[in-house]
Image (cartoon, rainbow, N blue to C red):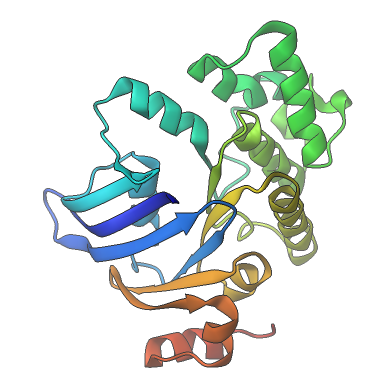
Length: 250
């Protein structure tokens, strides 16, 4: 059973043209799928569809093999607890006015999953899972580096124990050393929890480090899909070959 799937999904803005065209792919339990392509390829729009923030103009988003009905409150509450996201910029994704304990606990409060001592323990466990100690709980985001902030953002995403994590360029704003550390955190989480991952990136080196399968996008359409190793070693389209050829080092 697929956890999350796009089925012939297209999306068009009201005052613009269609930006996603008949895209289909699925994510199974424990699987990591990379979405790659240049700017304007439709990666972020597809991520919004998978998050249920936008509805396809045509086609469907499927969750646990059933259509995702955005107006079904009970379904969407279960969906929100099962599918969480990490954003690109660790400096803007954390509220600077709140302490870390409240930031990480936010999904538990909004979804009504835990409160009181139970919530505090789940927050501490989530932070420990990304390599942060309890002494960070009462500090503000400005006290942390970019890599630490992204770990906090990952802790916030996993605190409700989701089944799928959607990551939008999660390491692109970080320096090389910190990027490797955050990739190691995501790899460790997947190994320990069986978390499925959808990772959006223009950087095939990051995709290669985390994803078994890759979907190559161009101008809102899928131009190639297959194992990450296969696409890196023997890309089948000129566009994929150009992306692979632009990698400075694997």
